[in-house]
Amino acid sequence: MRILLVDDEVRLADGIRRGLEAEGMVVDVAHNGLDGVRRATDGDYDAIVLDVMMPGMSGYRVCQTLRADDVWTPVLFLTAKDGEWDEVEGLDTGGDDWLTKPFSHPVLVARLRALVRRGGRERPPILTAGDLRLDPAARRVFRGEVELSLTARELSVLDYLLRRRGEAVSRREVIANVWGGDFDGDENIVEVYVAHLRAKIDRPFGRESIETVRGTGYRLSANGGQK
Image (cartoon, rainbow, N blue to C red):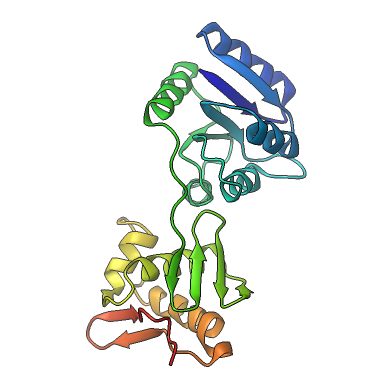
């Protein structure tokens, strides 16, 4: 197994490297995000261990950049950030697994072996509805040739609606697939985000792609609201 470790904490990275090499792995180390992107793009690695909080270029940005460049090497985020939304952001930007510091070395080794067994993923297809398109890998949205600025949550809601385009989906379904099954807040949060999306992807272009389905929820039209 050939591993790329990207972590700006030199002593910690050296300890992890020595531990992985003791398990028979070949480990290259980068101490900043830019070097990590360069090595990951040029090298042939089985997995990448990626710190989140690095100066200049965060681990999130490193992973997002690699996915946009069609580098689908499995990524395990290794970080002191332990909030559930931190983990969600890591996975949403293209990560495959998440391990918080302090961590168990045997668990790190086992998770890396599991990632390598699964292998790298293929780039997800571009989602389209008329001239509305979303690139899940790059996390970018366009209406025609105009790139739109969406928050991470808005993008996740749009992603789900596009995957179910032409179908009526309930608020509960949106929450389960975007916020998770353990969400216990107000279901009207979906209405708030749909309003945000309409203001960004429809109204400026004279479109009405997200329809309200009375008694059910919402439907994103298959033609993206084009007349």
